Image (cartoon, rainbow, N blue to C red):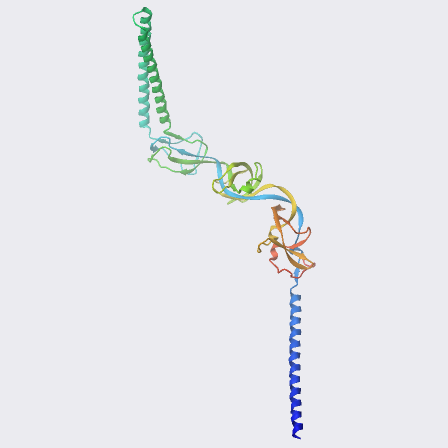
Length: 377
């Protein structure tokens, strides 16, 4: 009887263990099934719906190749009026913004001293002229005496030398008088060009030195953009190329064209300066900052919008749709330009008519499933 009970207890325990094991296995199967269902659900949720505006076709287009340029506006004609003689400045009445004409008197330098120098030089010239007259009469008298045999030829030659010396002194005195007159004329400061006063750098009553700047005059009828180009870009720029410039304060872009290219590079930076003349200068000022694009020419190539090219990896790439999935395709970039007002770039390693994501879509993980929602407007 006791042995039977013992075996019965063992059987019950084994049954209970078996039931527990079955429950554990069943629970594991349920978890695996739930996990698999969750994974399937996640894969289903990862399919992204796209509209036609989210995709950009890769096409061969005729690009207008452009080059970005920027720089300050400068007047073609500008000049500083400088003092040519030292002295006290008088009569400077023009100020910034005043209009002046070529040849107009801007100011004067006190001229009393220079007038005295002119009189002194003129008197010295008159004295030298009198000495010439004396030497000439002496020479004529000696020549008559030589002809009559009263003096030797040596005395005649001596009087001829005295006459030559007197004439040389007279010519030197005349030159000195001309220099003095020129210095007197330099006391009057005149505008070398017509234009507007940009700077007034001295005041009436101030004593100025030679070459001291008095005023700056600029002619706003002709303005240029001074664009700094890299060595590689400068090779593509030639005289006559058209440009469109946007200038701070101006409501509309202004047409321009390249009129000169500097034959020398700037020391240090090795940049090359190109000068772009504006077609209209109404309302513009020297020193305003301008930027725009220079049209270099046209080229036919396989292109995509510049915004569709991703650069968050070491090599540029586009997000191309292949068999309903996103593929990150590395590309080689070519020329850049404009097509119908949109910034485009030439690319390689992507087939024509392939569909890529536009730049507004952001970055999607490679392998993401996508589908085109044809019903979207």
